Image (cartoon, rainbow over all chains, first blue to last red; front, side, top):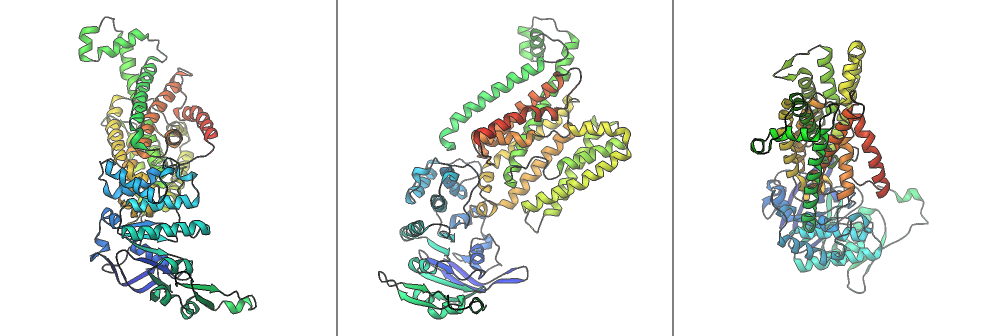
Length: 268
Length: 350
């Protein structure tokens, strides 16, 4: 569905992404992982066309992403940003209704169909009862779910998530991830997410993309990507690997290095 | 607030507001230093309406009263209304584009440009007129539009127009123009009073000709801004999010800034710099009905119109026959109400 060929991205003179090649299939769950500054978010922002990739490097359904009209693209790709803080007193319903923007012509008002889609989107994330509340009255987890509903209301083929759970507590992290995964399987849209938590990424993803210094180091099933060797190479630390006893997915255990001196630890 | 459900409710409030507006216009037109009775006033108005003139006219009309009402007060009221409307609508739109509660219609340097243009015309002694418009009007319009163009050129980065750069270059150019303005004033001490009076803002020189100039610009301009209400709502989520929701943020920003600048350049050229309205009216409306631009723009237009007509009436009648600058009145009467609202809500949400 998405094909990325030889994608390079420079920020000024600094190379952020180098020779990225990737194919995204329908209905699969992809996670981009890697240390700070490895280019995870830049890759995601290229796919969202917030940053403009070079011609013919990203194709969606065999059409260059740069040839899409804004509205046309918004019907294909929805994006849940890292920072979902909104400092305006819009109601949750208004916020989710904004997901219908790409489907509305300039002089058109929201139709009954749009209202049904918004309601459905809010019901799947359990936010329908919050609809008349101001977005500012919500907790972080509730707000995140409202923003995910907005992405659902766009009826996209692909949802991009930039660290969707990093500022939530463990309970809400798992609930949101369960929610996204269930929707991903039910609605058959692809998910591409950026994660810091490797274990959570391994639990939920079909495919992991491990980035370091703007290059793909490893790409494949969680057990192929999260290995002792890869973690050592990319994060410069020793870990203990085991299998999650309930589902066999890889689980990484961090080994504290209290005995080593601080300077030994940093060898970039 | 769910607009769809409450649309009818807001429509009724808007109609009620229009009713208040017409009452305000009537009261304002019958107020003034010349003592004109209400009957006399009605007779003058009826006399101007073709059908009613033939059927309902009974009172004798005093010619001087007719001139006062028709040639002095009415154009002034209408102009005040249009200026108030323009300032509030543009204030609301700028606060939305810049996502900054401090933004007002003058934020990208329009005011300083207009002031410098006006000062240059005043000190160069051009007092005649051009097609019936005072040179000072033309000078300030050119100053305002030139400044926006300049600020835009400085801020533009490739095809993008970063709002922070736009704000900063607006501030920088404003400071530059202000210092030039001060220097011009020092070297032309005899004209300082005239310059200061212009800067304080006044609608006292209103004429039908000015109304005819301002009316189409403000009405059509505000209509265009209203068309972009939904885009503005989405743009409040941040430029990047707006982009992923299918909004062409860069193009829309440019259109909005061009339309706003044209409106304000025109308005400033006939009224000078009237402060406060464009900053506070949108905030008051936002506190009352929420941030949705589909409501905010029409209600700001209505609120600004009523507010400036009242302020201008006070400015010409309170200490009649002398005038208080309307810019002083707006803050004097608007600020306490705004502070009251702030206190009631204890949070400003732009």
